[in-house]
Length: 123
Image (tube, rainbow, N blue to C red; front, side, top):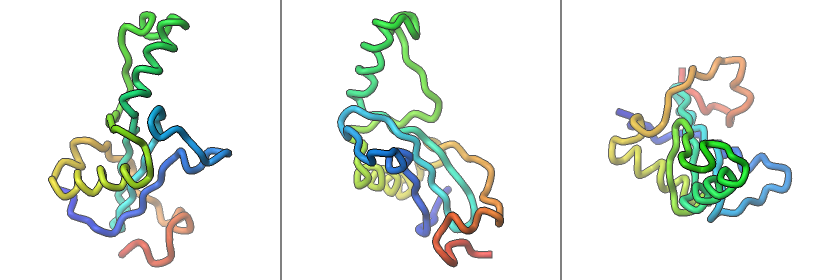
C-alpha cells in the first residue's frame, strides 16, 4: 500500500503551449513520482470529455462510430483542475486505492534526478 507523502505530480496539460485547458471537457496524463523513485501513471478524463469523444467518433467512424471508448489507466473526474487532481490523488492514497487506479512504471533512474526538486529522492 502506498503511504508516501513526499510526491511530485506532473500534469501533462500544464506543458501544453497555451497552458490553458477546459477543465470541464478535457483529458490529461498524470504522473506521480514518489521519493523512493517509484513512478505511477494514469489519464484523467472529465465525464463531459468522454461524451465529446463519443460525438467526435460518431462523426469520424472511430470506435464503431462512437459505440465504445477505451483508454488504459482511465480515471473519470468531474473537472481536471490541478487542485481536483491533487485531491483525488491524495484521497486514493489515504484510502489505499492508489495502486489499483494508477499503473506502475519503471522507477526514475538517477540520471533523471535533475528533473525533480533538489534532494527530492532519498537513497
